[in-house]
Image 1 (cartoon, rainbow, N blue to C red):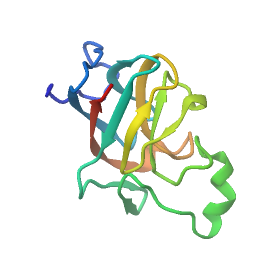
Image 2 (image 1 turned 135 degrees about the vertical axis):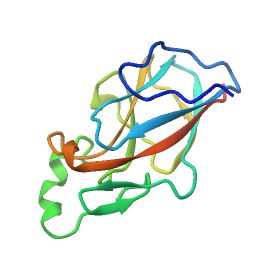
Image 3 (image 1 turned 135 degrees about the horizontal axis):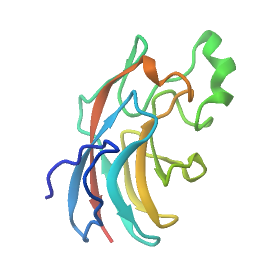
Image 4 (image 1 turned 90 degrees about the vertical axis):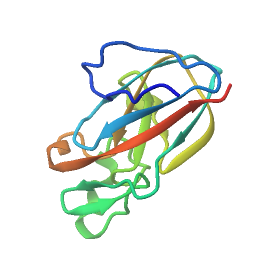
Length: 146
């Protein structure tokens, strides 16, 4: 197993995982794009897992990587989320800095077939201009399986 990657844009290098290799990536709730440090290639398969008990906070709402549902006034803002069909603070992956390639990871995702080649980014789903209010970090375990 490789050491944990920072999940920060100043990460010193990018890597491609070999089959069976695992890394932990720190995903910060207050960053719009968490750089995983991993390059992926179309056709590869990956597992994503978040350890039990990992939590982050969106303003005053604590949740795990599955995020949380809208209540009251928040429902009117759902269509403005970066990934409208995903829950608030749900863990999302993307190839490149584009939500067009959004992958709902949540608390875990098995056997993901990578849809395109590029650099893997991760983020908590939220409104694009409200990341300043989020706190916490998740340690995402990423394993290449094929």
